[in-house]
Image (tube, rainbow, N blue to C red; front, side, top):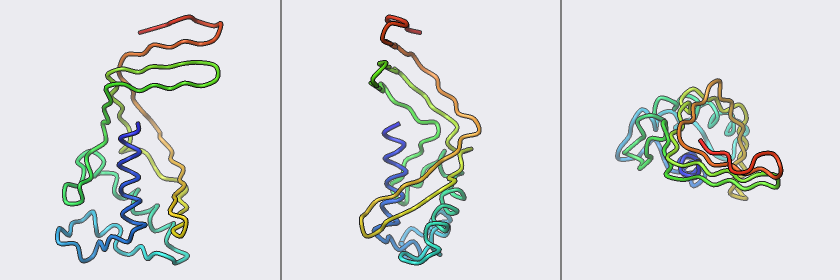
Length: 143
């Protein structure tokens, strides 16, 4: 998951830093999607949201021209999650369904350098092994 978020973050960072999609030496249809998004305009957030949603076909192929790797499916050797009531360890995880997702909200604060977005997944697939520990409910369930 961290790798996938890194990839989405990389796309957003390129937008925030003002990568000029229209004059890139490796101009591609991916760049065209973002070329009309003008920073510091009221339309910027909606433009980027629409461009990312239109870029979903690239989730499976990546965009080598911009050093963006494919991330659907996404693979991780190990993912650990610790919360107040449980611990979860996922191993050999393959996650798919990103290409069917939709960014529903997108807000950027370019001055502060941060982005906040919401994403909807109609279907998501997770394959791998897991080990979980939950306080008092099940001790060390694994599959």
